[in-house]
Length: 336
Image (tube, rainbow, N blue to C red; front, top):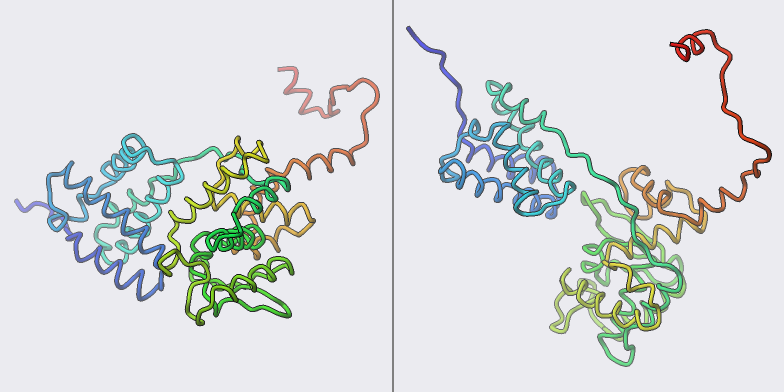
């Protein structure tokens, strides 16, 4: 008797075509997205090598079934101490690949759909950190502006707090991205290769103009170089920020209770705009958010706006009474 012939698919050519054809050619994915997906599959293939005792080039798509993917995600959390958010980002990369595989290998649709059915893990959304006005002033005053690096750092911090640019956007800024004079602004390429322009205040534009004049350079030179004239690295910015925060803590003790990262500076921009009465949709455009819903986290964190709303509520007088609707069905349910 003949048995059922199971369709098989080698993982290696499928995964390679996913990166070259789907991500790079069809979707024009950003280098950041490609790097993130690449790292996910490196981890997954190393996990498969350990658990399945197979080299990556020997793997079949069927080896990566839903239980195996689930075990990989658990390993990320338990042994690599990934947060639910990081775990979900890894799963998003895996889902994207399996969606591509569903078109390339329709005979394996049942296997693929079981992987695609793996849900994201719910995560508690904590309130964001941001800097208050005294903390902003203390941080901007921290760099020693009698030195070249201090002047660079002061302008970098001022630009970051005023514009809300992402760290990757700041360190990649070049002379050609800056427009001074009337309608001063900086132009950057954000997530998904989306270009946006962010206006500069007069104070920020003046500081940036002075720095560019001192720095010198051509249109393609980075605005904030390291000591070797190359672009600052993300770790380099984090290091200099930590140094200046430590200095600022001496005059502003409240900074000792906060973990200040480059992204906290971005949060600070959003909170400044929100407290100034700027509409949420405008803030989303300013920060390069795909959806205004992303900006909801700033509303949740803004206690000042909540206190203003509370002040508008008329005070309650007299004893509160429980509301009891006069409805036969509700009365029936109440009396059960």
